[in-house]
Length: 67
Image (cartoon, rainbow, N blue to C red; front, side, top):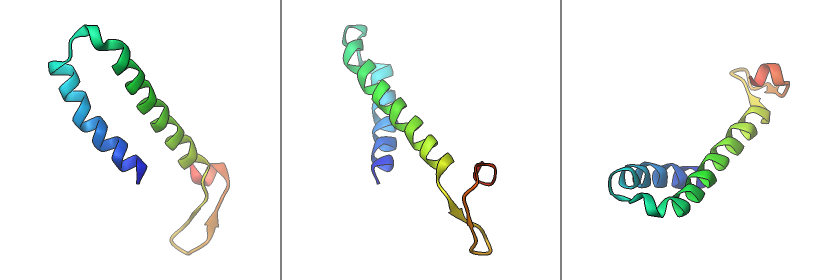
């Protein structure tokens, strides 16, 4: 659920920041963008190490199968 919220915030904030925010406020937005980037990177790492059930309901947990 938090990923959905971060995605919505990114979709709303990025166009507004690109069009209307001056370069003077870059420090604040740099921190926000960095937080979003780290959050998405952590989500990708978690997805690449999480086991899943395949179509036959077998639990797949090796890295090769997950990837």
